[in-house]
Length: 617
Ligand code: ADP
Ligand code: MG
Image (cartoon, rainbow, N blue to C red; front, side, top):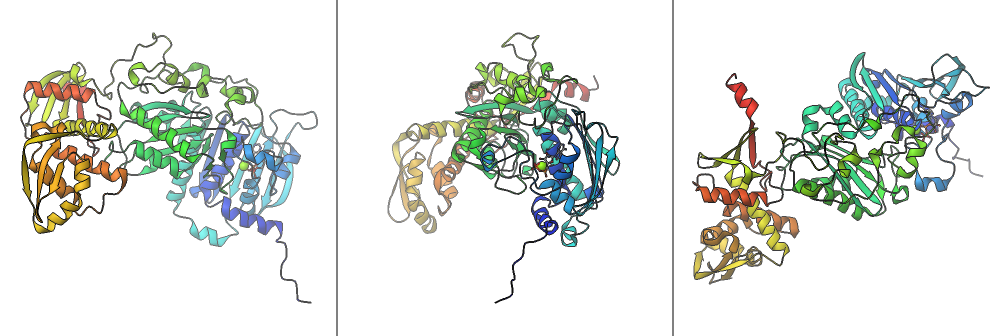
């Protein structure tokens, strides 16, 4: 008989292998530990690290704590209080459920766990302290700690040199930890967080009453004031959050924060829906800041697809995309007076210190119906799932903002708006026209300052949106020319141009090939009136090039942008008063008016205060 080759790995090695998946770096250990604290209903979580978390990670919470027996079990693999059966996997309402994190972290570190039940039983009146090395318990003793749980992880990966080698610099690891905490803090604004690194305090976040307040704590008042609240629903799904106006942008997508049922998730589909919503509003390669919460029934999303639980799978991904895209798109279409900058936190959201806590109460954003019962901290209507309809700004009722707990001041009458903020997009035609400067910019004023409009960018956006609307309603309108014109082409361009006749026609040019190197133009896009001449056609043939890049809707949209650009008034054209007023009125009727279709700003505001300061007034 052949020798037996297969054997079951000892528990400790199995844990180390699992640790390889769950604990990639200090930041992933921090994430797991903080998630456990959140699942335990903590209202304050303190994280401290040394040397980027490689020397020490300490997480202290005031959550429900564990009994002595549970604490010993918790360090074992597949030990969890959060699910019981496979059926529970279909509707997970806690952040953890795999029962792997503590065992994995313990198996690659020196770990101390101190814990004490918040609700003491007669048998169990003191806390417990457990010391373990590489997952083996060394010592169990009593501890005099206050209720809650403290975990200290020292020398992470001390026994897995291969993993140790993959760690980056202390600064990089520290910033990964800060990022992990930032994301968790955004998703749990009602929980206080502190974070220190090598003895230096980096974050100190008091309990916030709304996501916007948390955003302000994390990113500062300036950015928070430039964010708009959004909310949208679609059948059983809903999304809400905050997004930056289109004048704001970042060089990388690092300011995208997305959450699914309260869980920090990086999802390509959601990221794509966000990017598409901002299309033509931001210059290429620039990204917005978005904090987006998506809530859907637990059955509609599979969270058990990734060991670090940072990815999910949606049952109906198309619908998720539509919901996110349309909600953001509609919010961006009319970025009028800022609702988000109005600061009136919802006081009812502040929890009372004496409220009893329950185990596993981090479910409010996951299971709204049960939340109020399970978690007294979240009784505020901050995550009210009343169906909210999307309405244009002009008719926007308060409930949307109220539901988010932002921008709602009860002392102010319903429907009354805040004073126009310096960041808001004004109603252009209501501003006083000062005149045109440098034959390219329209100067306007209101009570708060002076505004310059880039006439080309403005006209380009107006034209582009009109073209797009025509295209949707059956095609771009063509105006027949009184006398057809001929366009002579070089032999090289002629072939390309003739191949592009279908695209040119779709864009409103009634053209026909005429011999090997010329074309006849019989009609042009009506929107340009007399401005459309052979020159515009020639420009478009140039833009199309060899035509290889025109595939699909978005490529055609790119062509429309070019058409709008070529056909719009240039900088250098003197406009008379009637033309200026017509442009402003047009602009007010236009969606996405804050930026030209290439993403450049349409207007810049010079606040009165700034001008006065410059004159030392
Ligand atoms: P999971 O979170 O997937 O259940 P973990 O290994 O992270 O698995 O934790 C194991 C168990 O230990 C949890 O189910 C929970 O009962 C308990 N636990 C871990 N951390 C804490 C904490 N900070 N407070 C209270 N209980 C905790
Ligand atoms: Mg866990």
